[in-house]
Amino acid sequence: MKKWLTSVRVEAQNYLRHLAGMLLPGVKVTVPIVHTTKPLTLEKWEDAGLQSVIDEGRRQLDRQSARFDRVRTSAQLLFTTALGLLVVMAASAHRVLMRDYALVIAWVFGLVVVAIGVLGAAALLTVQSEFGAIDTALLTYSGPNPLRPLAEAYSQQVRTGEDTVAARVTVYRDAVWLVLLGASVQLVVWLTTIS
Image (cartoon, rainbow, N blue to C red; front, top):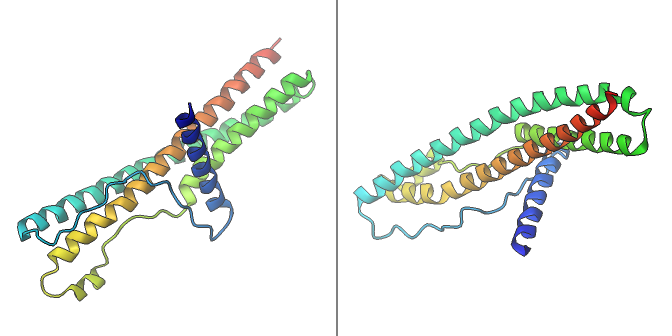
């Protein structure tokens, strides 16, 4: 139970940091560290092994970029859909506000939860992301054989991207759950006001 509560706390903090990063200019969004494997030294590696590390590093960074793009595309769809849901929910205010307090409280709760989900989707679209990248100009300072520094750079850069993508996937998942929860509450409210 304690592990679950810790996980919920970390996810909530991650979500709130992304919201703060969207709403407060200049706030750096730190993400939880999920990629805990530290690269080993490559001092004794041969050129063929170093080239393999470089190739795999490039592929891993490409996969990270593709996963990040999928999350952004999904967040765009969630944002527009949930924004439409908020409009429909707000339009039903006249039917709900004339009812008893429990129904009004449920309606407001659903509205707020969907709005927080919309903000999460918007944060995924606007908050700056950190990804590892290789600066080719700096690589020229490595001399005529940049294989070792390049392999070391790739082995270190992939961690940043993995943490960023994992944080974004988590924020997206949480935003979806919030929108679904708010929509479910709104459905109950709507069914109750039909009569």
